[in-house]
Image (cartoon, rainbow, N blue to C red; front, side, top):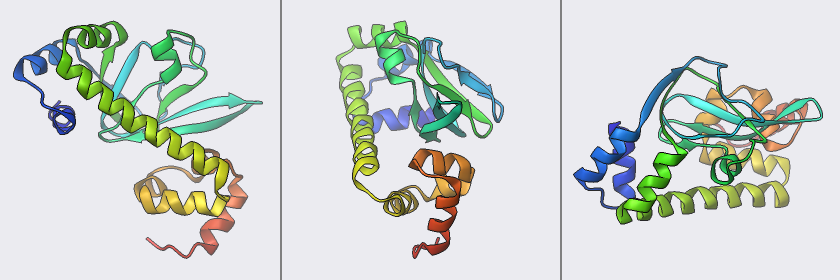
Length: 191
C-alpha cells in the first residue's frame, strides 16, 4: 500500500483522511502466473494497482489473442471501456508472473470522486498520464515501421523485453514472431 500512496502523492497532495478513506475501500489479492484476472465478455468491476508482478490485457481476433497492453509494478490496469461504461469487456487480463494487486470497486471509486476534490485532481492526472500513453501507442502503431516500434519499446521499456515472452511482444507490436526475430537479430540497440 505504501507504493500506491507514494505514487498518488507524486500526483497531488493526499491528506491522511483521504489515505484512510482509500484504505478502507481497497481490497488485495494475489494471482498466480497465467491466472485470469478479468475474462473477456465480463464487466470489469475493479481498477487494479500492480504492487508486484506483470500482467497483460488481450483480446481475441479470429481465434488468436492480440496483446493490447502490459502493466507491471506500480502501474494501474483496467479494461477501460468496460469499467467506465459498465459494459462487457472486449478484452481479458491475465497475470504473466505471480502478482500482488490492490484493487477498488467501481462504486467505491465513484464515491471517492464524488466526495473528494483532492482525489479528483489525482484521478485526473492519472487519466491524463494513461491517455497520453494510449495516444503514444496508437501513433506508433499507425506511423512507425515494425523495427521502429520494437526499438521504441526497447529504449523506453527494456524490462518488458526481458520479462515478456516474445510471442506476446510480437502480438503487442502487431507483427509475427518471425518478423520480431528478424528485427531482434538486426537491432543495433543492445541492452
